[in-house]
Amino acid sequence: MSAPTQEPLAGQTSQDSPARSGNRRNSELWLLIVAYTVGLYAYANVSLAIEGALPENFLTVAIVFAVMLGLAHTAVRFLAPFADPILLPAAALLNMLGLAMIHRLDIADAARAAKNSTKTPSPDVVAQLTWTVLALLLFVAVLAVVRDHRRLQRFTYTALVVGVVLLLLPLVPGIGTTVNGATLWVRLGPLSFQPSELAKIALAIFFAGYLVVKGDTLALVRRNFLGLGIPRGRDLGPILLAWGLSLAVLVFQRDLGTALMFFGLFVTLLYVATQRRSWLVIGGILFVVGCFLGYLLFGHVRLRVEVWLDTWTYASDQGYQIAQSLFGLANGGILGTGWGQGYPQFVPFAKTDFITAALGEELGVTGFMAIFLVYGLIIERGLRTAVACRDPFGKLLTVGLATVMALQMFVVVGGVTRLIPLTGLTTPFLSYGGSALVANWMIIALIMRVSDRARRPALAGSVSVGELS
Image (cartoon, rainbow, N blue to C red; front, side, top):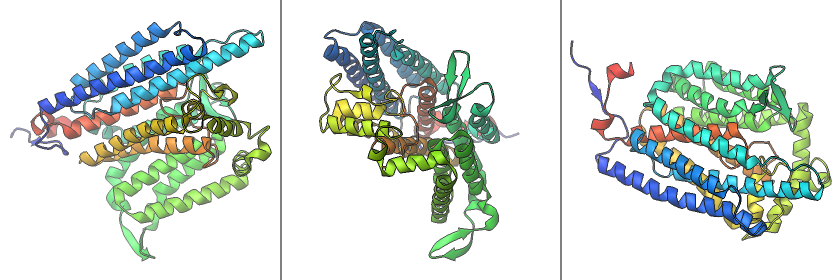
């Protein structure tokens, strides 16, 4: 029996070498130091501006982040030495800035409690720091367990089952919890989490695996209409199924943001897999029809649209949060009020849905756009990884994960700035909440795993056919 043949991993270039991997990791280390310094300065500046002293837990935060970011960097250096050097520092910077704003809002909550002679609430920054530790441990675990992203294709339909179960979990009586009108949370004793955050990873794996197999079939054209290739009728099933699933999320969970994110994810991957513009047109038509049906059939969707179109009529009740968000952004202006000098506590849900508005007030349009640019870097590096990766599953998986983050940011920032109706999604890495933080760090780990495999030298990245079978 002949020896197994060797397959060099696609996307490798002759320029990749161990020396270059060392340069990437050194660059990552320096960028991490910059991100750590900026984040720690922001955290300290909040208390210095308000109380005139460093926060009591400043040393704890400094040590925890130094240890965890050092652990994450070391893990990347050994487990994914050829991975993109920008993703980890960019995510770390956003995570620390979010922690600084949560700390700033904790101080405001404590001041309000003292003024009203009520019990001081527990600081959310402690819980968020704990979730950060868990998220970074899972980041390392993903890199350690998923040594080859192509193995995930074996679990295509398992990922579908897991994703659907996670989406339906909040509807189970006894554990599902409705927050702010949306049934998105699962509560088990003192702990609560949002299963849809993990569902987006599972469904991205399913969509990528499914389209690798069915992409050629879905690219077939039966007829042309106005220059667009119209697919066969029987091939419309997958997109209609995704559309129906999105409507089901909208109907039963009352969550417009998650419905838009999942449908947009599938349409984007369908276009990338088939290169047929007709799927974008069909997806756009179904999106418009879904929005119209949602407006006609569901009162909560209709109310959000009406508040979006005429915010100031509802400024004292249903539109209060978006009105306060716009007031805060206007108060911040170009350069912002400065850390601790604004009034972000006046915006409801400032630690979760509206944390970008809180940051926009104290950092101004300049800081707001700088944060948005960091997200743009993460998304761009994800798409760049997809270009470098020539195996179809890795390409689609990375595009899917980057698309999820791009859609989530568009929906969040669009809602906060009144570009589109509010949808209730959290901001990746910035918002308070453990499930979202854990899921987004796992996404970064998966993108870095694909990036490492795509840029590895042929000798180091060679994989036998038998190993992948």
